[in-house]
Amino acid sequence: MIIQTFEYDTALAGALATRVIDAIDRQPNLVLGLPTGRTPLLFYAALRDESRARGTDWSRVRTFNLDEFVGVAPGAPGSYRAYMQRELFDAVNIPPAAVGFLDGSAADLDAECGRYERAIATAGGIDLLILGIGTNGHIGFNEPGPGLQPHTHRVGLLPATRAGNRAWFGGDLDRVPGEALSMGMATIMHARAIVLMATGAGKVPAVERMLRGPITTELPATFLQLHRDVTVMLDRAASPR
Image 1 (cartoon, rainbow, N blue to C red):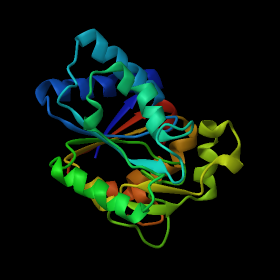
Image 2: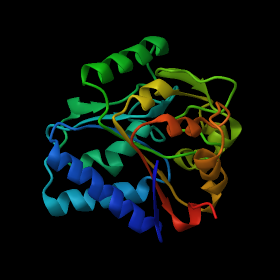
Image 3: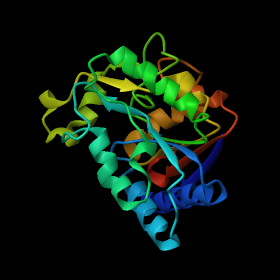
Image 4: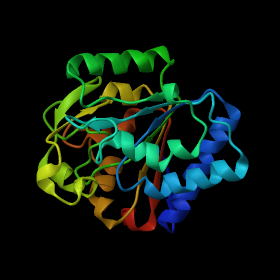
């Protein structure tokens, strides 16, 4: 792993935005994997600004997001699809058909997971995947446990994960879905390059175990130790001492 530490979360966000825009400039048909949640908000703000300033053409870019809540329609408040439209897609010229997203309201969720895996494969796989990390070490919605699913799947969310997503549901924990759809660990690990970003002191225990601890399904992010091209971007607060 390459570890990069920044004094402030804003500096991290700007550096990551520059990396993504540079990647699009080099490879206009880039297949980009994208996260949601609180940590990436500054990154998406920087990405919008950098894209606008440099006149970046997104017309051939293909994106796939990591996850979506079960039972939440794509346009509904609280959906990650609505989050991405607001935070990035409305600001760039990516064609709607090039946006890959899981539909948590699909009638057959297993079929939806299979469809998503096939769509990623048809696109040629993910060139650059951006990840966050949960306080319990989850990436995507791959939660700690005795085993991990390799491919896109339906997953029950642990209490800490649901609590961490209250903000998207008006702060009401009871409204946070108990399940989600998520890329699996093999899908993630097949990305050609990965960047994991972490900010804030609350992420220190998970980051420290990810970097230094044994590889274990009880902290899914540790599997990134096995990937050939991972950059970990931390602000000073999230850096283990």
